[in-house]
Image (cartoon, rainbow, N blue to C red; front, side):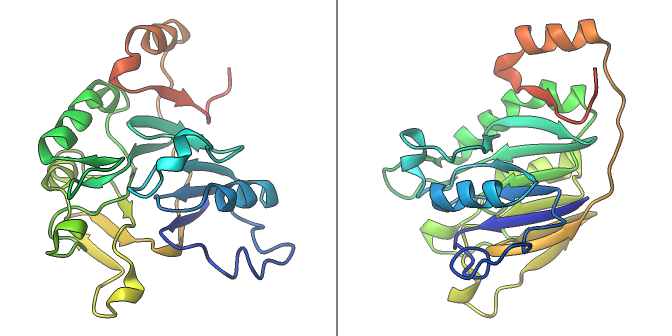
Length: 229
């Protein structure tokens, strides 16, 4: 599966200077926050890919005018073609504003997804807006990462954690990618491409799946995009 991951800045090549065919070949688009709703709507309209997104700390307008044709997976775990994807938007609180959280609040958000993570036996890709603490973040209050995300990686060991928030063009010394254990932590500011194999995973019985959706919605929804009924 070919994935386009985006964050923070609208790519001129994909928007201002778009030409037919530029988005061909992408199977999935993952948006990691701080992007105009019109941009996401444009990308999903011009491609054949499904677009999943989370909000950044500058995306307060999404509540009134969300991206059309796109699906928000903030605080949710979804499965697409067998790939388990978890979304956690927002950044560490540094002033009053939307989609900003304390460390304690982020830990609680992750804890509410615990049943979903156990149900799917882990996660393959985590998309966040802010980076984990010490892995691509900065020391200023606005761009500091979450310790809770480091703990998430330690416990569930995803193949990828994709984030934005820290604009690479602001500091050329910042790495785009870092390895932490077996996890690739990638700053997808503007855009980044990756290949991920389809991962058929164990399908729950239909009865169990129905119970999960109705009884455990607060623990994170499991959307079976990749399973056929």
